[in-house]
Figure 1 (cartoon, rainbow, N blue to C red):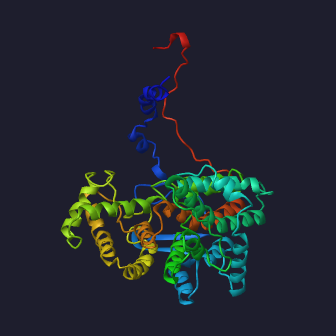
Figure 2 (cartoon, rainbow, N blue to C red):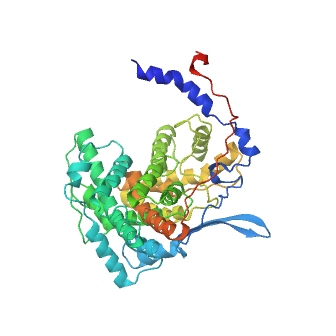
Length: 450
């Protein structure tokens, strides 16, 4: 029996019967992607956790403005400037801020670091029995498998009281770096026959430092490398309740399920190239640009190639310039603005100034190319994914870990939103879908057409 041939024979019917006439979305005023034509999202909930500002309203007119991002009401620029000026790491502080709603004092900051350090350990035999057993070639799937398996090691896995959910959240924040890095090491060993390195995390290190320590065979890293990785975690930690994976957290949490199931669902969302996988596409796109643009200083040649990408004639033929444009921001993504200054500094240290200049030129030229090729209802600018992949590349981080590193950061935001959903919402999220297929009569088997 040729099962694939049988399936292929029915696939055309499946496609035909799954198509929705695009005109019906307009007829029934359906907000596709839960966004209206102006790009504004449909209001689906309320949150205290973060705020995204991309426009101001003046005399009933919506006016785009430079993007702003606030964690618990505090501008992300001020948070970053705060820990950078103190010459310390910021991700642990941001985890505290997002989960508990206020900035920790020095004693609270040290205490939360101690708690996370105590939780930076996996159950006995977990690495051998779960991570090393049937390793995956996709690190996001490996991460999801590990998270679901941790359910079995938790005596209070189904307890959704707030103290227990916060305990689970802090454990997952601390364990995610281990799950991601060890899954990658297992993958490289079993799929690529590389030597296996399993470095135990060090309690005195920050989360960013431990990632580099566990990942690199010699455990070496510079303070500058650890600081920019920490910054990347801070900038990716949270981005409002409306992004796909965080909305998934709200939807799944509203059903009353356990923490591990909710987080696994959010990981599945983040894995998609339209969401967390975008920075990988940016790096791949730039490899293609570098291979096809002869003079990286020639704006006209770069612009022409960008138009080819938009016209589905180059790169992956998707018509997308990855890392440019955002569902919310138009004039600027504040995360990209913050990142850019540190990226330039790191590029200088790594001797990659030429490649950084190419990124800068594409950032400048892409919006004009997009405006020329397409009719845009809003402006476009570089988003955080535009530079994050380049940073990870300069840090010699493997591309397989780009999206898992996003998850290592975003678990902080997911956890805060899960707590908020349990406390404040109390109702299952169930949006409406309208059936557009007319009722049909049941036909007996003997009367059906062959």
